[in-house]
Every structure is written in structure tokens, then in C-alpha cells.
Length: 351
Image (cartoon, rainbow, N blue to C red; front, side, top):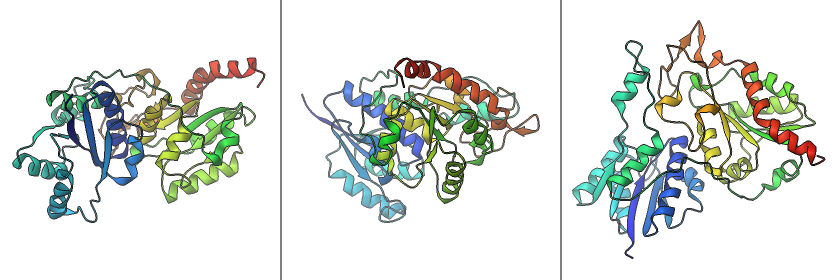
């Protein structure tokens, strides 16, 4: 059986790259003759660990791969893999320049259809077309189908058995219910009122629950540190791990709670169920985490929603930002509903 090598391009953002990894796992499992070369930022390499016949090639867009000359250098690096096909899953200026080099050199390629027109219809204020768009992971899969590969996505979470991070081994092996929280996002309109989390943490007793805070930089680290000082059962992970160890930790959680952000997509990668909170954005845009259920989306429907595909635009509904239509009570009730079977199991086992 002849081997076929496919170059896969997706440089950013973090959640989008994580979704690509979910698709490539199924593609590799269903096409044994395929060899994949994944091009993305080096910090995302851990997303692709364990995918058979995959080589990760990092791009450094601010250094040796900057600008057209840098992309030409990257093109020459990638040619050495003896590529047969090119799958552009990004379709931005940088990826189009790179794929143009391959096209000019005679390579067969396929490019992601981002459905920009339909997305504009979904977010516009007047004559909004409020219908679910094709899921992004299916759009990724379409690129490989255009190249002639058979691919049927299961849209099912697959729980991964991963090592327990040493730092949290005692916490993760306890009988407590373990919940991950990814309360931050790149854009402010995707961030739920941070004061609400104090209510969540105070509602669930330290004797039974442990919360782990994920994601962010210096400012988010300060907030997470404050929470951990105020609530003994809240544990900060920001700045303590690389992506691989974060995935290891998430794989041992009973539940993840995230914004419409990379935390949800990382949970999908390791098969952990995620409750997601939505405001200016909407699952209809196609970015729900792979294998996650639309029934696990916590949101309040309003005719102004969504106002944005990426969460970079405000969405005022009834005088407040759309995401803050979601109340702490709504989130508490969803958590209680989801962990009830888990807590029963713990009590029955004598934990």
C-alpha cells in the first residue's frame, strides 16, 4: 500500500489548532496509508502527540519565517518531506502565500472554506439569518475529502488515559469531585463576569469539590492566585505547566467549565465533558468543541446574539453584555445537575 504524505497548515489560534488535532486523529485512524506533516506554532505541538504517522514542523512567524522571504524559507524546509498534497486549514494571508508557492511548484492542494458570507449573515444586526452553520471540524474534514480521502467524523468524546501530573497527584487521586475552570478568553466579550466565580466557589464545599483554574497570562495569574487564597479548594495551574501537562490534568477531571475558548477544545482533545458559557458568540457559528454537546452550552437567547464570530465585538442585550445574561444561579444549577451522578457514586463507594 503506497504511502501518501499530506502537509497540513493551521498556524493559530489555539482553539482552532486543537480542533484540527481532533480531526487529524480520526483521519489517521481511517486512512492507514497517510502520513501527515503538521505546520503550526511550536507551543501547540502537544496537541498532536500520539497521532500515528504525524510529524510536527514548527513555524516561527516572528523570526525565521517572518514575511514573504520567511515563508519562502519555510516552503523550502517543507519540500524536504516529499509532500504529495497540501491541506490549508487556515486560509489567511500567510497560509495563502505559502500555498501559492506549493501551487506554483505543481502540488495538489485544497483550501478551507470559511463561509465568510454566511457568518456575516449570522452576526449582522438587520436581517440576521439565525441558522446553525456547518461545524468547523466538518469544514476541516471537507478539505481532506476534496483531496480524495475518506473521512467520517464520529463527533464523540474519547476519554484518554494520560499520566497524572506529579504536582497534583494527591489532589487528583482524592475522592473529591474535580472541576476545571477556564474563565478567561482572548477577547473581553467572551469573558463571564469574574465576580460570579466567587459565588460558584462558595456554593460548592471544599470537603467535596476541588476546582482547577486554567489559562491566561500575568493578569489572569493574579486573579487565579486571589481565588486560590480566598477559597482553599481552588487551585491555580496558570504558569505552572506546558500544554502537555495541562492536557494530562484535564484528562483526570470530572467536568470542565469554559468560555467559548481554547479550554473547551482542550477538554475535547482528552475526552472530558465541558459546560461552556456563551455571550457575544454563539455555537451556531460552528465552533463548539469537538464531541461536546450543544445541550451543554449555557446561554440566554436574544435577538442581538450573536454579534461576533470571534468575540471581539460587544453584544449589548437588555442593557448588559450578552454573556452576563447568564446568571450564577444558571451555572450552579447546571453543575449540580451534571455532578449529581458522580457524587452519588462517591457516597456509595464510601468516599
